[in-house]
Length: 297
DNA sequence: CTTGGGTCCTGTGCGC
DNA sequence: TGCGCACAGGACCCAA
Image 1 (cartoon, rainbow, N blue to C red):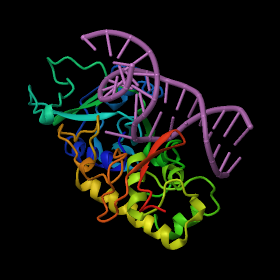
Image 2 (image 1 turned 60 degrees about the vertical axis):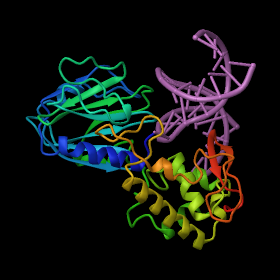
Image 3 (image 1 turned 30 degrees about the vertical axis):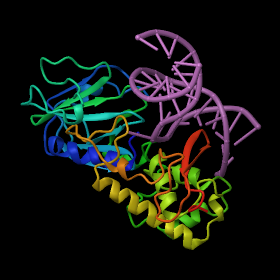
Image 4 (image 1 turned 180 degrees about the vertical axis):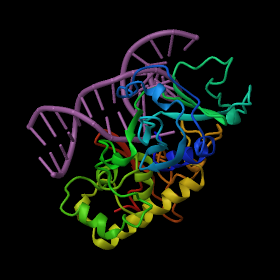
């Protein structure tokens, strides 16, 4: 799934086709993704002007201007594990397909793929939401009360904001017996990290994923904050990581996966010069963790 | 409250 | 080549 860098990459890709533009057509090909879509979802999108496209954690947020009796509302999109968004330019009959990636059908005369669930069309492009596993979700919610939405209300600070700092993280880890890996995946503690970037951040900070969260001295908590920041920042610059599903909105590939130090590198040598260790893979709460037993303590 | 396991769903890649 | 199984970037929900 898309973690924060992938969602941010998608946000940047779709913004030009949505911001300041009017939704002239919307299609929902099924009534639900992970949960039921809102009542009359497609109809309620039609005619609305998109004021801005932002991101909170792994959620894409499209702020919609009021229309008629509808107040200002925000379209909330989560990509789940395999959700993908493609921008198909209205003028393109045969869109570019870099990397051999076939863009989902969207424009007139093209057949939609079996998992192309939602399409949103402006005068600039058609935004196609594809999600084979359907772990993703969409909702429409009054912008005025956005912070109260059940999916957003309990999220911790954005990892790239000043609110995520050593003092905050130390307070949230204090006394925790769960692993540091589980704590960093807990979206209430810090919002937007997933399995890949937690593994990579722990490597950078030299912290074993199975250490008790509450066992880190403040200084090392500070190292972890720095590591989270640097890995996310670099991943965003690289356009995210493409394993299976993630694509930039134009269909091209993110390339941060070429810079993974540990994720998916079980048995391979540690990248730290002179280390000589091998990357280990363990399971924690049902998910794979990768780390260097020599560098990470 | 915290913690870990089960769950939703489909596709892919591996071993046999 | 086919089959079955494990696993996949998430996170809600629930039992203990």
